[in-house]
Amino acid sequence: MNFQLNNWCYLPLSEISQINTHQIQPFSFDGYDKYLGLENIEKDTGKITSYQDVEKANIKSSKFEFTKNSILFGKLRPYLRKVALPNVSGICSTDILSITPDETRIRKEYLYFFLRSQMVTEWATAKSTGANLPRISPNLLLKLIIPIPLIEIQEKIIELLGSNRKIIDKHELALNTTYRIIQSIFTKMFYCQKFKIETIGAHVKEIDLKDPRNKPNDYFKYVDIASVDNKIGKIIETKNILGKNAPSRARKVLNTDDVIVSTVRPNLNATALVTSEYNNQICSTGFCVLRCKNTLNPKYLYVFTRREDFIENLSQKMKGASYPAVTNDDVLNVEIPIPPIELQNKFSSIVDVIQKMQETQLKSIHRDNLLFESLTSSIFNREVISKCNF
Image (tube, rainbow, N blue to C red; front, side, top):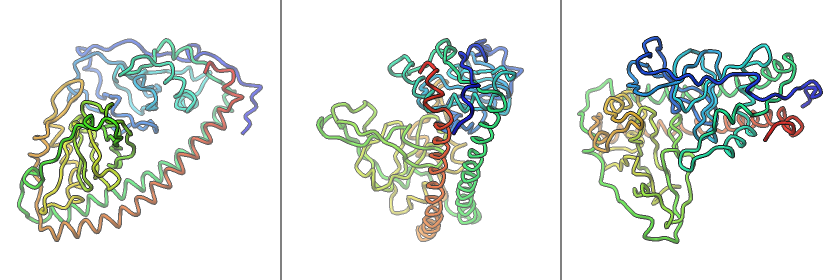
């Protein structure tokens, strides 16, 4: 793909944009409605999943300001690729850099696509410092050399990548519709009739704990919070870890059909149904593991944990400013309708059919994302980035 590279110039980010480093103190929050935490930006895609209400967010530390003209760049763990375009103004975590480009020289959307490219992600990851919480320095990011074509070329690139992004959005909308259908069926089957209401804890078993370090030379699959895609409610990636290197939180044994619920930031709804692939593997103590008795169908329970009322219930019980969390007992004490197991099983069969459709949709979205990355790489190719400071 050729965009007349002889007309491109190369300038450091500092010459074509500004990073807002002015911190807004809590006593000055009155003029702001929206707050954005790093957890509100989806990894890889950069989609903003939600904005928090400033008054309800219980914010006690200073924040950065952003506007609709900003590009938001997650400086903490830049390998997560949390680069976003907000559609409102507000305040954000100081782990998010608010970048305002000079639109007379570079279009915001063009710079956004470049900053979320794989090359920049790899560069920022390599330049980050801090073992447990790696961050890219704002001053270092400002030194990043940006390839800048003519404005008309920038707009063509925006159109090309933007149209591909719209295709992905369309397929994701179709996928989200199937999730809403499942919840709608759940409501009609179980909330429109009166069933006995009992706590989840009354219908789940005790789980096993195991210290993988007792078998130091055996590998195991470790499911931590980052392993769960909260958008689709699935375990998507795990770490293969040698027993002797097991994290201190790797203690809970998983069985097929367990339902896991993250107790850290439960408002993000990181829940999943454990598949046979992860049977007898280990998850973090940051999960509440729910193992159903014969009165509760695992898929019924799983869908219940994806509901807004379940999320809201736990969100109201969160404690802690930096890492808000709930306890296992908070999860176990949530009340759930207990319909006859035959009706739960019928619902599970319906969900099975819909989930097969979802698998097809997920494959399409995966192909779309691969095409998007391929297009990005072809635009910002070796010839383009050879003059950047990667």
